[in-house]
Amino acid sequence: MKRLLWIIFFLPGHICSGQNPQESEEGIRVMFYNVENLFHPSNDSLKNDDEFTPEGTRYWSWKRYYDKVNKVGKIAIAVGEWEPPAIIGLCEIEDINCLKDIVFNSPLKKFGYQIVHQESADRRGIDVALLYRPNYFELLHQQAIVLKFGADSRPTRDILYVKGLSNNDTLHFFVNHWPSRYGGQLATAPKREYAAEVLRSKYDSILNIHPDAAILAMGDFNDHPDDPSMLKILRAKKTIDEMKDGDLLNLIWQYEFKKGTHKYDHEWGILDQFIASSGLITGNSGFKTPLEKAQIFDADYLLEEEKDGVGKKTNRTYVGFKYHGGYSDHLPILVDILFSN
Figure 1 (cartoon, one colour):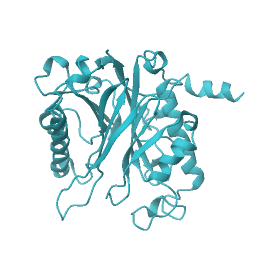
Figure 2 (cartoon, rainbow, N blue to C red):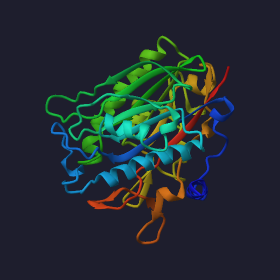
Figure 3 (spheres, rainbow, N blue to C red):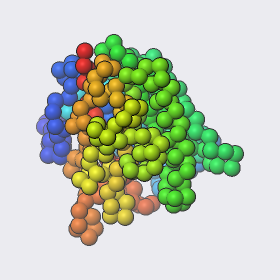
Figure 4 (spheres, rainbow, N blue to C red):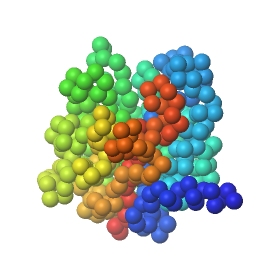
């Protein structure tokens, strides 16, 4: 009976096009998800997390917390089509306790995920992290890249760098959650442009030694694909034909005007993106990622009708300070990385 209910929950929504390459040993699937304020209910005196405690303004209970943890696990399985992704990038995670609960106390518990995480200096305590399945990815190196804006600026999330082996070839991942637009897009743009400069320098440091290196940046960049940070500084193009030497490819830009990952003021935008090096596209790195293998996962249960009945919006955990019981204010994205050798 439980299995029947599980199938009913997932099948009516959205099935990813094409088989998960892990099932045929032809590659791996990568997912990124901004989970929207996954805070551990215990109070951390070193963080500004009081509102997400049982006594806080959001009345963040243990029941609500574990419901959200389970939903993150269920979405990962749905994205993987029963074989969850080899790599999962996450943002808006408070601490290692949240990650352990996702790995050990959610539907992902039987898949053996390992955690890559380091506490950032973000005042609210929200971090980025990467989960991986050791039977598909062997961890070689990890590093938290600290973004420093000056003594007068509030600290933000680090960029997480992870290097490892899959199918005996090297993959490089960067997990991002750039400074938000709170305070105005123009006023906050310099911080995201600085983050882009730092990330671009990390790409270049790898590509200068290995021009065909397979590099994938993922994250909530809080900028759209055609903003200067992404297009001019990071040099992430929309199509392969537009790419010149050293350019990168934005795998999610193709969905502009069709879909989005986040909705604000009744407008869908693409804030969550995958940025691939040319070596990851051409197959010269040992991996090949066709553009059509990148998707926005927009299952029906992750969406709900707008109040005015015009279109849909994300099914959020909170609407303002009112508990809504949904999933997130962002949609997950996924991409298949195929083995080319």
